[in-house]
Amino acid sequence: MDKSFLFHILRSPKGWTGPKEVDSKEEPLRAAFMNFDYDLLIIGAGSAGLAAAKRATSYGVHVGIAEQADVGGACINYGCIPEKLMAYAANFSSIFSNAISYGWSEFHSSFDWSKFIAAKDQKVEQLHQLHMKYLKESGVDFIRGRASFLDAHTLDIDGKQITADKILIAVGAQPFKPNIPGIEHTITPKELFQMKTLPKHIAIIGGDYTAVKTAGSLNELGAKATLITDLPQILPACDQDLSFCITDIMSQHGIEILTNTKVDIIKKIADKVDLFCSNYETNTLSCDTILYLTFLSPYLNNLYLNKAGIEVSQKGAIVVDEYRCTTQANIFAVGDCIDRVQLTPVAIAEARALVDTVFGNKPQILSYELVPISVSCIPEAATVGLTEAQAREKFGESVQCYRGEFQPLFHSLNGQDEKTLIKLVVEGKSERVLGAHMVGESASEIIQSIAVAMKLGATKNDFNNNIGIHPSSAEELFCL
Image 1: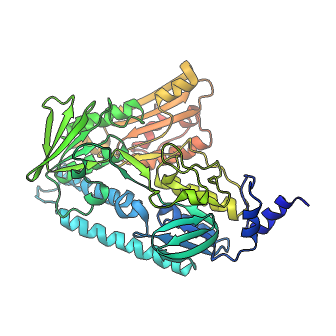
Image 2: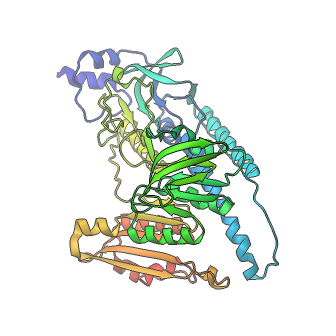
Image 3: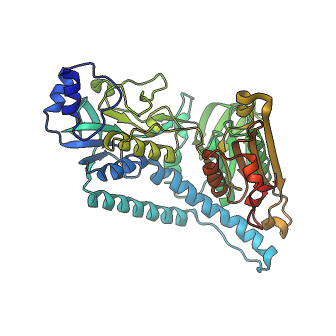
């Protein structure tokens, strides 16, 4: 019998070992006869780590999960959840102002940031407790501490050595700040959601989804918001029509958007912070808070990946194959620490697919082609699939675009000239829908449904033959 085949059998009594060949015969033989503390040890109790733990226990796997910070990762503590709660809070501003048009008497209300932060903290703590309760009830050992590799099967967690047959790295990413003079005077989302008072004037360096929705929410809550990007437009990864539409609406709402503007120096002067910028008409912008939201880099500090034979790319991300396996056959990585799509739902999907592959003997390759993305700005926006530019680059002149812009019924009584935009990008020959983009109320819910249809190969003719709910914004999709 081939010895390498025997090593694979001995080493993996609980499932799939991955598509890679084992180079060293000593390591799998040693691993085969070791008594490990865990079948699976997860580094990181964020969204991906928690999803992996939950799925793994369903296969009867003995799981440990190591985390040095609060359970839930960035998403729960200072990312998706706080951002969405802030967007909900911001939406009341529009509701209150429009109520008069619908017969409500005029009234005056004010926003208290400290009360919002207290309510947010209470909700976050509730989520902490729910996740900890689930881990305990599922038999998952929660290990508090910083983990670092000693070898491919051994971790040091705050001085204690813990072994595992298989290890999953789900440590996420952290905000990366460039080497700009005075960059220490900027904050990240983590500090934003710890602030005791709402900034009077906040400058947000960045132009992606997170920067745009944060600027929109803070503006509606009463802060003056200035968005700064060195690119020609905000939301550069989005369809250009969607980007232009959001830019116009944000400008109407009083948000200052500075494109093609590079921050060169930041200086703290008394209780103000000055930004010295290239290509800015006055060269200097003064505010009281600067939020840096440009880059996220994999959080690999002090993991000592080299001790486990794990390769890192030039971008600083863990190198994995299509099955999320690293260069070490028993170690895997998912989420923001690999070079894929840095979104919470993607990280969760990767984690579940990885566990199904390794422990469920159901190898899964995840597709990243139709990942819907929400921009919780005001108004809301969402997108899925190819932009018009991407589609034309791939399919040429056969691409057709169907675009509709209309005033939603909600604004028919208040006289506001705020439009809803819906756009479908279609491959002309097959009529297959390649992309869908929307700005307007309930955009996330509508685009989420379209994403399912696109996954099933929906065509423009399929949309034409459907009957919409009236009156609704979604029905416009069938009239383009």
